[in-house]
Length: 112
Length: 251
Image (tube, rainbow over all chains, first blue to last red):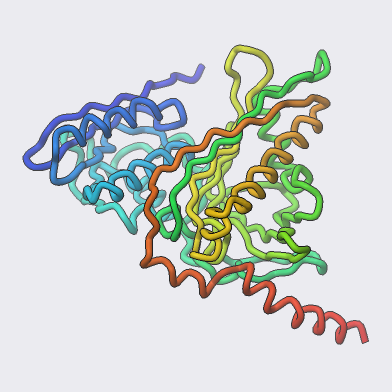
C-alpha cells in the first residue's frame, strides 16, 4: 500500500520575511493550498517570501510548474523569493528546470 | 532543526527526473527529419521568455470507451508515452527515441506553420512517471516553458486527460502572433486535435476544453534578444540550404 502524505503549507513571519513551510507531496493536488499560502504570505507585506522545503518528500513536474507559477507571481510583484531546506536532489531539480536562475537557494536547513 | 537536507532519503520518484544538462544533444534521426535549432541549445523555463506568461490547461474526459477495455490513467500514460508522435495532428512530426518518452530524452519537432512552411525545434523530457510526463522547450522554440501531460481518475466516469502548459512567447515575433490571436488559436487547435486522437486510440471520444489564466501580464523586454534564436526564422533561412545539400547528395 502506498501511503499518501497530504500537502500542507504554513505561513508565518520571520523577521522581515514571510516564511512558507511546505510539507508532504507537491503535485497537482497542492495547487489550491499553495496559492492560498502565497496570498497569505503577501498579505503580511514582507520584504521577501521564503519557501521552506524541509518537510517536502515528493515533487513531480506538475508541482514544479506550481512553484514556477509562484515565482512568476512574486516577480510580477517585485517580491524576492528564496528557498531553504532543499535536499541535494531538489537542488538538482531546480537546476534542471532553471528555477535556480531566479530563486535564491540558501544553504541553511529548514526553519523547523 | 530538522534532519539535515543532505542526509534526507531520496524521494521515490527520483528516477523520474532527467539528469541535469546545460545544453541539448540530439541523437540519430530519420533522413527526412529537419534537424535545426535543437542541438547545443539550452532548455528554457517560463521565466526566460519574452511575452505574457500563460497557464493553459487542455482537459478532456475519455468517453465512449468500449465496454471491458482496461483504460486506467496509468494505461493512458503508458500508451501516450509509447506512441506520442502518432497522436499529433497530420503534418507535424515528433522525432523522439523509439522506446518512447523517457526522462532525459531530446526530441526534434518538425511543425507545420501557417503559409505552408516548416519549423524545426525540439523538446527536452524533464520528467516521466506512470501518471505524467513533462517537457521543457529549448531556446528558439515558440514558447519558453514547460508542458505537462497527465491522466487521472476523478470518480465520475472515464479517465480525465490533461495537457498543461506554463509558457511565455519566447520573443517579440512570437508574442505578436499571440497578441493577434492566431498563435493561440493554432496552439489550441493543435492540442485539441491531439486529445481527440488520443481518445480515438482507445476507441473512444471526448470534448476537449481549455482553461487559461494569464499569470503575468508583463512582457520581459530584456528577453527581446531571444529573437536572434527564433526557430521559425532560422528554419526558413536554412531550409533552402538543406534542400540543396540533399539534392547534391543524391547525385
